[in-house]
Length: 250
Length: 201
Image (cartoon, rainbow over all chains, first blue to last red; front, side):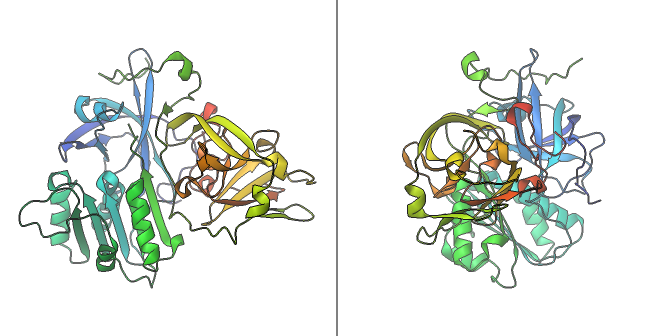
């Protein structure tokens, strides 16, 4: 039975927060020790459930950021100022707190090492999270599937996992990370400094044949733009996997 | 003792809307988009809607024929498995009952199929008898491609992945056959009030 395959009910589990790491001013990663975690695939997500002392509950879904090889389950959460759950996860939650979750969920937006074809990952903002799980999985499995990540952020300080991506790419010539900053960029910035466009896709995308594996994740307008550019570039629409989040994730 | 999240207060809903929001859901005012691949490009000149499978003579409508069918205005609450619900959404479309008029079939199941290859399965009696529509307007405007235009299925009493975007037809089946998400970890039935989100729920 494949890792991550679920046959019975996905029950709620109570995990313990092991570590909280600030990734950017608005984004933190929460590493959770989950007893009897059944394992997951890179790209899957978990449901998180919060319960107030009067029994009121709220649930949200979050992509898993950690590799399947990691013994902890890490989610990376962007705090939405008008949100209900994310300000708790990024702001209130502390190390050693208990947190309820169930998963892993989703069997489509997943990638398994070893890859059998080049991998193209396109991320907008916190859409990088499930793609980072794939990059971490590939590194942990010592897989050398050629991978290109095109990652769009608003500003330099908004780039999630920036140092880890630099470190991984420096050690692995088959991992090619390209950034674009859409709102502002530091002096001497050598990456792209504009919204995703045709020229960028022409620069970064693998040739359409043989068909690469493609994963796109980000806000709806970003995913629509990226998928349309790839189809125009000659990619088979059936080979492009997308995951979108709207403005309201909470 | 029941589990409590230390320090979590949450945002209570007013009791009126609360009774309309299934467990684990929260309401949104925008209209999030979720789909597994690129938005298909649809040529209305070649577009058809078909009922096939366990039926003596498949029924097919061109775009013009489809648009000339009797329409209904529907205002319903919709519930996405990713946790958001949207109340009082207004649609215009054709009732599945209208499309099924005159169809004699022993089929008990149906698979909706879409441009882009998406499929989703349901018992036939869950989309007949005023329970489902094939809609082409949202809030008085043509349905945007991101939301499934030119037409999508609308099955408001089930999670929204059953309301197939870009739907091109219904295949009547004698046996139940899991569709796209139903084969990828999501519940075969998908009743939001019973929180049938995933396999085994």
